[in-house]
Image (cartoon, rainbow, N blue to C red; front, side, top):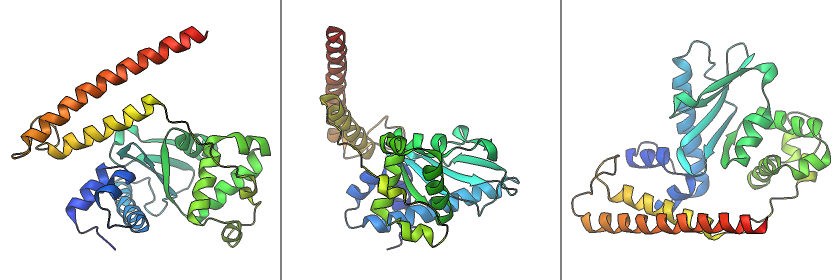
Length: 254
């Protein structure tokens, strides 16, 4: 199902994290979302590249999206000579940065992003081959097993069919998936839960707001708008109390 001609869906795809988008459009399958997202963001990246004489529009290697901020999206591209790499932030150009080829690092430009809550949305097969080679040649077994960013990348491979057979059809390298141990389940804290509820409230406020500045309600949604703002005050107080409680407990433990 291609929905890039639907302005409402495209707008929501640009502003909502993947999870929230799929919750809003429950009839759209995850694979369909991924295909539309990749096509749309790639098109936007190519337009940016076409406006920059240095960038090669056909050099997109991977796409990252902040799991909590749908508009925080990085696309990795190269210049025409291939000796300089760019991390282009599609909607926040001021966050864009570049580095010479010799200084490019998957650790800094991919694994660390994954640790910080970004999610790999797509990578071309050549990029996957380079990542597999980086992991197999650049780190020992214990480093691979203990690095959360590397394990998160390997988790992506497991969930998206990036296998040793697929990689070796293009480039022969070691099977890094033999070192996949998974990500330990994170214990959900009270603060985690409260922050998640806050995100939902903020989303509801944006839905009931007139315009992007959430400064006034839509006509007919005044009651809902007011109630969500009341909930926001309550949740903010609970979060602040929980933070103080956590700080006191840590000081007591010392």
